[in-house]
Amino acid sequence: MELLYRLAAYRTELIWIVAGLAVLVVLQRVARRIRRWRRPARLHPNLRQYAGLTQADAEAERQAAMNIISTSSTRSLAGYEIVQQIEAVFVEGRRSPEEALRGLKAVAGTLGANAVINLTHERTTAGRATARGDAVIVRPTVETAPTSTPSEPTSDQPPSAEAPEP
Image 1 (cartoon, rainbow, N blue to C red):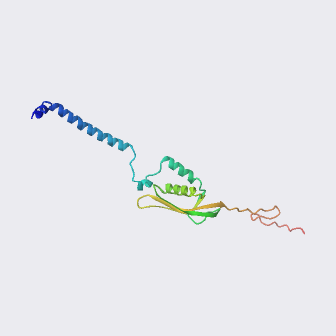
Image 2: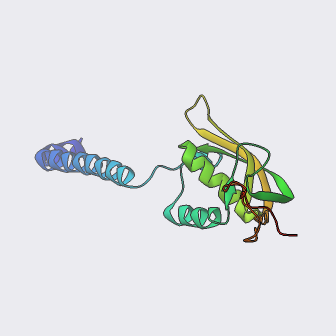
Image 3: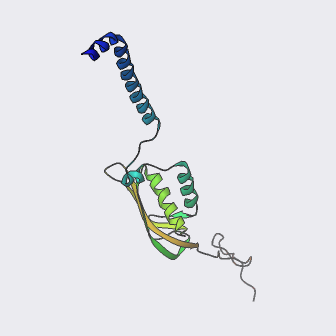
């Protein structure tokens, strides 16, 4: 009983202390929400591939993609001869078809290829882009242009009316 009388004497102080603690709890929750709002969301490890690339990863991918000199949606490249097929490559979960093609070129470039053939890309139902193709090594075909001598008529000039000398 005596304790209750003492608490009753300090009632206003106790009300201020409880109110102060309630304000501190509210401020702590507000501060926590602000901190969460500022930092990027934590992603589940299985979903990280869909998050996009960091600036450093994008630069490394762009450098690897620069090794590719040509791409084609067919089985051959005009002006090039296929020397070796390395392997089929596949990239999924990119934000745009252009990003998927750049990623595909980067994968092929890191495998040692300098071209990609049988190239296809599409959008998934989730709105993400996928790309696939075959990483190959190619070399330019060497075609020698026919040389004509001054005495021979070219196909642009009609044959001369002069008779050849015996």
